[in-house]
Length: 405
Image (tube, rainbow, N blue to C red):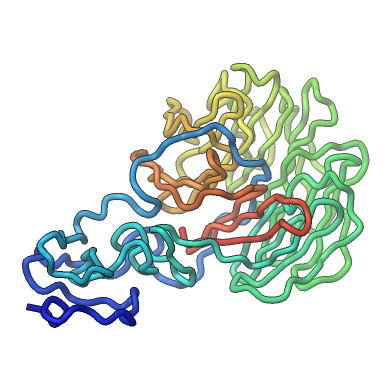
């Protein structure tokens, strides 16, 4: 019988120490490492663009505690008294407290990485605080970039540290943000413009000016692709080289184009005409041509994200996340919960929604996992290990945060 069972455990024993149960607590579960998304601490490349919509407000209920679901394979029952009172759970053959254990937070294998665990949830890591209504956000392997409501674009190292302003004195109608290996790109809705600024800092370069109202931007194959709403009866998709040059008209998109994404072959966008079963989701070759409607009669998709096979999108008026094959085919609903920004990685789709929360689900569908709640989300971004977001609160309450995926 374990020593703690005979003598009782001292009060100063730390909650995050791991103790092997004293028999009878079930067979040890085998695991090769932390369970969940991206178990290594290495950096990923993730999605470099973001959405900038506020989180949903409709209430939604999800089963189970925050963290990865389905931990039964790693969990043993401690009901027969094999573990001390302050570590009542068994994960991978050792006693833990899943309410506080940063490597088994809420469920076995839910790893908070550099964060802490409280009440069974990985806690947000604050990278920058005392901001004024930060909104859109993007991330690369080194920095997090965000738009501060009012007039500026800033960056901070992904591990935290001092923030650096990149651009100041801008319009209040900053509408989109993206990053590539060299520059940060940003769009202003009215008066319409798209510009770039070096990641290392320097002078901003105007790429698009004049009679445009950009609604979204995406970077692919050395060009900036953007949706334009200047002519709200039709709208247009354009491209411009990332280093500047002639603006190319790719298509009269129709139906008020909004969110946009691009890969090495196609550009994709959704439309927002009427917001009542009238909004299509389109695909078109990067060099232009005839747009192909992949999903019709949708309700104002405010955000889209792509992988090699599917377009994922949210719906504004009725909520929910759906996907449709890039090659064409049937639309598959994934969830009916309220959703704003949608992002994807290799395995999961992520969105912000009810209760100021960030949620995820396998891209193939299944149970919803709560990552964090109680936030005021202005924008989302991903890398290989973390979800990043802006807390869109007026000064001094605004912040940039991250939490393990």
